[in-house]
Every structure is written in C-alpha cells, then in structure tokens.
Image 1 (cartoon, rainbow, N blue to C red):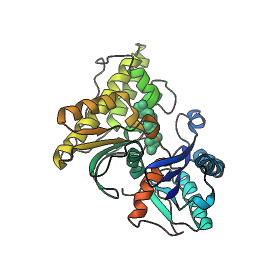
Image 2 (cartoon, helix red, strand yellow; image 1 turned 60 degrees about the horizontal axis):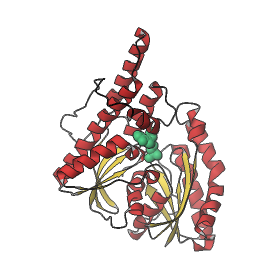
Image 3 (tube, helix red, strand yellow; image 1 turned 90 degrees about the horizontal axis):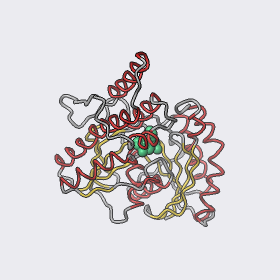
Image 4 (tube, rainbow, N blue to C red; image 1 turned 120 degrees about the vertical axis):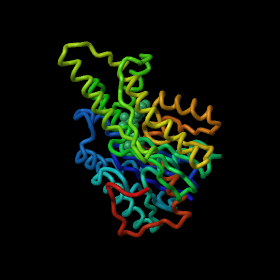
Length: 333
Ligand code: KG4
C-alpha cells in the first residue's frame, strides 16, 4: 500500500511516499529554519505562508522521487494535530484536496505518533509493545505504546517542551535557531560541572517533567554574568544545561519502564538527536537490561515519512476521516 504523507505542523514542509508502513520510497523536505532564524524562533504566519508556497511542488517531487504517478497512490496521510494551527491547516487542507481528487482514503495522524513511528522505518523488527520517550520542540512525553494505535501517556512536561527549552537556552548563549544542534556541539567542548541548575520533582506525579525553571535559571545566569561583567563559560553552561535536561528525561523513562515492565525503550523526536541524551539512555538501558532503539538523526526531526509509517497502522485500525477533517493545535495522543 503506497501512502502519500504530509507533514506541516511547524517549520518543515514534508511530503513522503511510504509503502506498507515500513519502506520509504521518497521523503521530500523543505526546512524554513533559515527564515525563522532571522527572528530567533518560528513566526507562525511566515510558517503557514511558506507551507502554502512549498507543498504542491514537494508533492510532485515526492511522487517523482518514488518513481510513481498519482494513480499509484492508495491513500493519503496527514498530520492533523498538534502544531501551529495555521501551519497544520495547510497540510490538512492540501491532503484533503488530494484525497478527494484521487478518490483514496484520508488518514489523520497525530504528530507525536508519527515521531514514534519513525522508528518502524529504521528498525524492521520493532513492534509494540514498547515504551517511547517522545522529545521534540513542541512535545515531551513518556508513552506506553501498547499497540500501533493504542497508546497511554505515562508522563508529560507540565510546561515547556524539552526542545523549546533547548532553543531558548541556546538563544541566551547567542546560538542560532534552532538551538538544539549547536547546543549539542558546544556542550561537547566541556566536561561541565561548573553551573548548578535545578532538577524538578513533581509531587505525586513522579513521571511528569518541567523545563520552565531550568530555562529561567539559564536566562538568569547569563543575564547576571552580563550585568556583573563576568565571563560566561558558554560551553560549560551548555554541558550542564544538557545534563539537567537529560536528568529530567532519562531516569523517568527508566522508571516508567520499571513500572510497566516494558523491556524495550524507543526514543523519538528532534531532541532524541542529542548526543548526551543518547549516551545517557544507552547507559541506563544497558544497566537495566532494556533494549534501546535510537532513531537515526535524519528521522529524529520532523519528516513526512514518519507520518506515512504511522498512517499505515492507523489505516489498518480503520482510523480514516472524511472531508470534514479539521486541524488542531492540541489534541490527545
Ligand atoms: O521533532 P522536531 O523536528 O520538531 C517538533 O516536532 O517539534 O524537533 C525540533 C526540536 C528543536 O527544538 C531543536 O532545537 C531540537 O529538536 N533539536 C535538538 C537537537 N537537534 C534538534 N535538541 C537537542 N540536541 C540536538 N542535537
């Protein structure tokens, strides 16, 4: 089954063709990051407009890269939530029109489910049940993936997402948007251990997380240093900050595995590209005797193929939509 998949929830316009949920035939992506970097973060209206400009051309490219024509498309999948509403709406509207024109099923896909499903593309043997740590620019969740379309959230951030925290901290350190990748590179230049940053405990909800205090702590450290004219060791701060994020995520993922008895842990989302978090997850899983799946870097960030992968399983579960499908800024997993 060839699924033509659309992703436009933030600042990547992506169109892919995925066969039977596991094989990527094409994966066309146009990132707008350079454009938003001028403003230090994503400007929603610009994102929507850029999606409108790019989506038709990328669709042609995805079909041609796959060596297919429109008549080879068996279904259309699209991210319908969560994300920047105007941005998501572009993908949903376009996907609806394509599904209507081709007279094929329309499959709505939750963006975070897509991130998790990116792992099906890299690891043919991977099947639920497993535990997923979904960490991206907009979402930070610990998810019990009982089956391909049956998931329960075990822990979530109470405020900012991990990626958002990376981007804001990076901005304070003068790094370009999106800040996660340059923070990663900077952090590798220092052993850290210089700055004390907060670790959060959510009373009564031990698997929940919080990143806003950490973000504020980094902002305050940088501002105080600037006001006092003291030098800031940016590499050490990047290292200590990343360790604080990792300490928020990794022990909770392991605790969730312990509570559920899951022996397989899967990482997903843009922040799963972080080298320190990957290393900490590897160590923790080795110690706990858990199997760990870390997606290749190209599948961590937003892409269309992950939507095509999850779309296949949503289709098998009968989760299709009619043309009244809407876009949502937030939606339960
Ligand atoms: O999954 P993604 O592309 O978009 C969302 O679905 O949100 O994630 C983007 C986020 C950004 O916040 C970016 O700074 C972060 O992932 N990111 C990283 C790294 N690479 C990207 N964060 C930490 N370390 C990285 N190496």
